[in-house]
Image 1 (tube, rainbow, N blue to C red):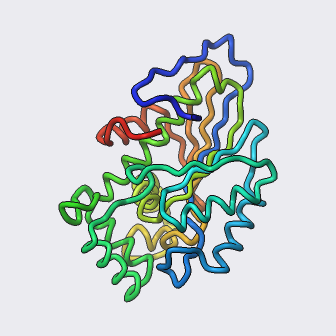
Image 2 (image 1 turned 90 degrees about the horizontal axis):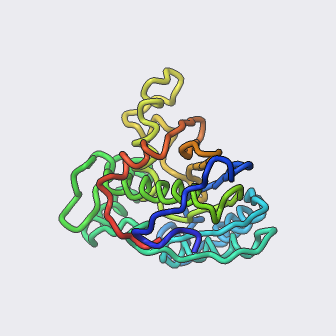
Image 3 (image 1 turned 90 degrees about the vertical axis):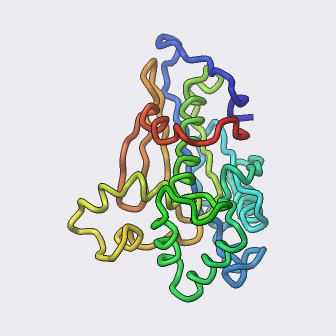
Length: 262
């Protein structure tokens, strides 16, 4: 496992023992294009997208591990990426509580209706309007999804502070879903986007950011740990960047569920 057992305390690297920084390049990426937009498998174009992504993925010398949700189209995307890496690496299927927003059938049908009638960007905007409120009793709020992603990044900050990975450079792409990724992105970059007079005009934050995610688009989080300093996470999404400390990410994730699988 690349991550520690749930509830374990990482062995922190003493200042004098770490001469080369530890760099974890974590990315949360939407899956490739699905057949017909809602199919269980990838389209021909989607398969080509995933193969191309694998060939072009920046791979660090110490290893690459591709994570994905258990949905068929995300595991297919991850498998094609893995097959086309210059350095071969296994991919790991992640549990539904981490990378898949588990919506009720009723709300999932509503999202698909918004997508068909108004497009992906409008559907995402409708979802984000719920904020910290659940769309219904059995569907997670956007705030919950944001906290889950923040919690995942906290785990990798802790990994960067472990002796086992001292001085290593690892590439860790996560193949996920737009409704997993965009609540976190909107939360992190909202102030920057709203304050920028040059941003695209629109009625809501998603439109101002240039629309919802395209296939195999997402954000990058470069986590750097140097000496005894706290890990710093540099987040990049399209034209926006921000740096967050581990403490800031922990604050964002503090209400997320405990004991999730690593």
